[in-house]
Image (tube, rainbow, N blue to C red):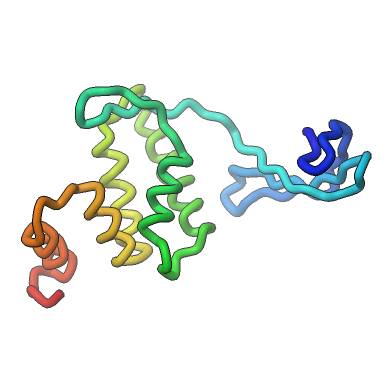
Length: 154
């Protein structure tokens, strides 16, 4: 592992820990040259299904794209990065468990929305408004009414 400070290749692991799901190893390292510490994360690389976009194009799974979309939805909301990472880890496991080589992007979008709905209603509505491309205020209000059990109080 290359030191991010001096670029030296010799370092040693000072501490290793697993995350609570035992899917990621966090390693604290000490550079032998500059003696500065840095952290690396090790995760098992697995093959994710290709995603079929609405227009028929195929796109590889991109975890960062999912993280960024969810971060935007959760901006200024009481949702931590740890919570988002946990949701995305769970989503990846679920998609792998499906055993499909290709999946419609709608499967992923619906699962993300369901997860966000459990975390934070405002984040859910933000994500849904972008994902579902509401054409007008009525569609948006219908979604809100559905969230509130159809009582019409938004």
